[in-house]
Length: 110
Length: 113
Image 1 (cartoon, rainbow over the protein chains, first blue to last red):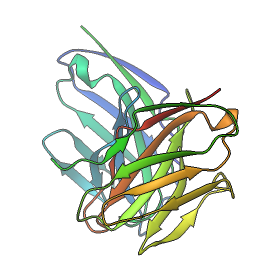
Image 2 (cartoon, one colour):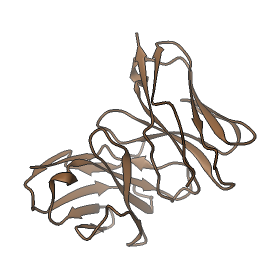
Image 3 (cartoon, rainbow over the protein chains, first blue to last red):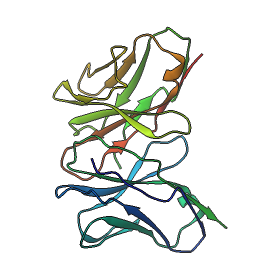
Image 4 (cartoon, rainbow over the protein chains, first blue to last red):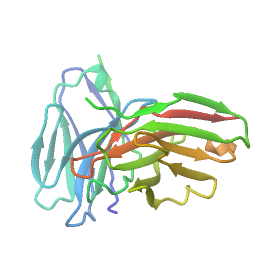
């Protein structure tokens, strides 16, 4: 499974756009990139998944360059309730186990 | 939105006792998982379950652990003789094997004293 590297923490203010970048240099051809969000004492929650280029849903956008060695999760206009840990995961298939790293703790301030 | 339900939300048990953590996965999901998270640490994979058998397990999932799907709706994790280091949040998750992502439950906080 490809190893991922992401910042340990980030700070932002309400209303700003937040971009969290994840490096995955050893991504395999059949690997997807998936982002999860976790609030304290809750289970991780699926945010978005992509394979290449750009994916957008009602919550976030995911940008993946052509070489797929990194990806950027973009959260538009964050609010205080977006304060959470965000995990970047790389792997193949909807049934394979998930390997979580330490994630990025995003702190949104008023 | 469909949910994965876990009970109890908190459980305190004495060292050496058996505990059973319960999960009700999403009804049309076929793949089931247990993960755990020790306070302040990463979410760790324990076991995956499909077609009434374990498909993969981690080194953490030793002989003290077992999983069962006793009926069509419940998925349980049993720890036979709890140790202090088993204290953690235990998360159940399920997947339909086709859509993106898993759905996790809210977890059971297990405290072994």
